[in-house]
Amino acid sequence: AMLISSCIWAYIIGSICSIVSSLDADQIAFDDQLDSFNRMASYNNLPLELRFRAREYLRESRHHSQFLKSMSITESLPPELRGSIIEHMALCHFDYIPLFRRTHSKFRQDIAQCLRPHFFERQDKLDFLDSICVIERGMIFLG
Image 1 (cartoon, helix red, strand yellow):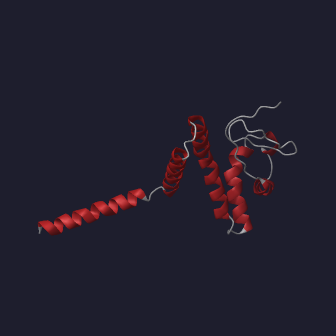
Image 2 (image 1 turned 135 degrees about the vertical axis):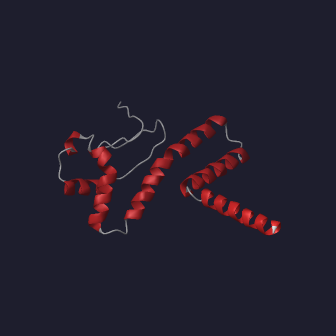
């Protein structure tokens, strides 16, 4: 009886650990990527400053990667539904841009579907002089 209850207890604990470990697949993938980078950096004896820059880039790029993943999920949806979802995702930007504040929903959907996300390393030089840029994180200096 004690052996059976021990096996049941081990099964329950194993099931709980399995469920908890699979709760955030994106976090697990990020941790794996960071671990792989750290092994590569160590193997290649990268300078500390370069390691810090790369880790910062990997950490900051998580949000961008999640956005791209969200966009790819909507690609198989019907155009109107996809447009509504993308508009909702871009709504936080539209509310801060005076030009778009009082525009019609269909117009916002069309504009939102034309947005192209980019991600840059700190102090990258941007060459978007012929575009409207929405900076979500960070800051930009002209000159």
